[in-house]
Image 1: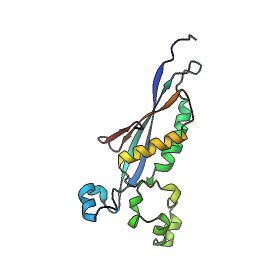
Image 2: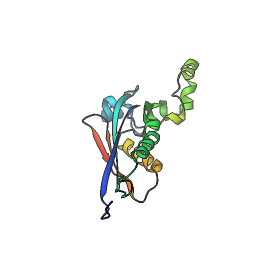
Image 3: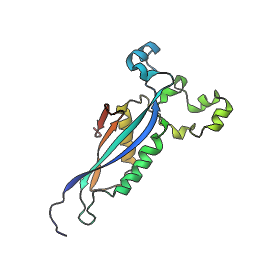
Image 4: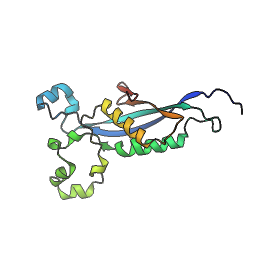
Length: 173
């Protein structure tokens, strides 16, 4: 193997997840929420099939030929993206009057609680305004927390597709 200048490369991993949310602000009246968020403010919420592209930038290791072991990146995204977000409710405003999940569960018939495996605080990512922008920031912070430490690479960019036509790019700035 030849030695020479270490080259920089960008490694991207793509994942898909489905999640529900509702855009709503407790600081606005119901009329103002509807005017601002339109159909995304529906009291029953709505869902998206998100696509996220996570890019790591770093030096190509001369011994392994890799910037990051793609298996490590895959495991990180499973923990930091898929587990907290896939088939989850992303909105803290989903629950009536911004109440806690336990409070919401007290008002459900017992069979709904027993038959649902998704009704626990740990399965809900409570993003106050669950816009794609805020979700991208949440994912960035969560990925940074779970990415194996390294002096040769770092998280570079997240591209979060809410739809094929609506994309947010976040670089930690």
